[in-house]
Image (cartoon, rainbow, N blue to C red; front, side, top):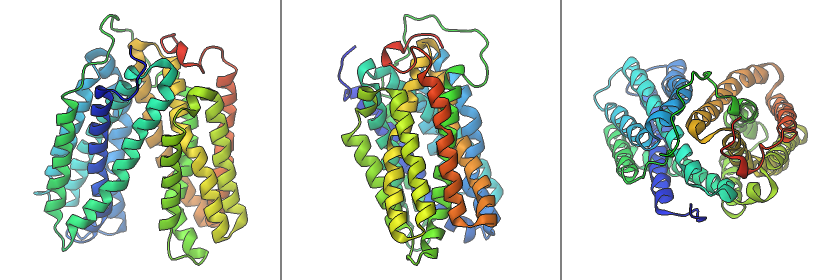
Length: 391
């Protein structure tokens, strides 16, 4: 296998991922407005419409992983893009909250197939010694799509041009499917399919997935309550806070993309979780605009490295015949952590205030260091060379 990361197949899976996440990003600022306006639903209805894709995306990712191991990863990406495109296009005739929720659930299926297929292909293509770099670059497609999509969505919406937004968003996913059709099948053809009964959550993803759940609990708190906390501190909003966070994450995943490869996946993940915990602690203790920006910079430095490093650990612990199943279990942990964080930290905010949210987030992320120490003490799981060893 070539030692290059930036190959034509990598570019194709990157474009397919970026296009699909661009579609999802276009919906982010428009769907709540559509639910509140034309659908005429209240705050609860808005929340239901926005969150409706999460249940199927969460539950289907482990199952999609098994399918990818048995039938191939390429078709997961293609079908995922097509399902997402079709569900969004059908927003045009949808005229009720129930219809939108049903379509969002279908869209969640597409998201699950896409995420598992694309993430597994990236790991299949990556040289063992540069897997962290490959995953870091791949994650930029996710962040880039979610960052750029909302800009076009709001631009197209203008005077309530919802159908234009839906159709353009669906068209972008169709282009993503076209890019995915040029992908080779990366499932190892010389390996016999593992047909043994497997647990719903792959064992290789258990400890890394737990750490990802803990990290996403903190991220959910940041996403939900940083805008309100910023106003409490006298700022006009949290736009600059999120801009700083995104800039640092993108910068480190670009310039520092080889950090997990050079320093080891478990060591990098441990340091990253500790950094993120310190960042949340600074925000909670400082209670000032300066503290908010400084803490955000510190936690973003950790956040940038958590996902690539943990993904490396998962792939190193899973045999090639079960790689897609392991990746599916791992990526599902992100949705689970976000859901837990949004609910539990909302209760914390109601009882202790926003500083309590960030204090709890700091403790939660610090707890993530414990399973990482267990992983570091387990021989053969922190080096890419063990990628094909059984868990």
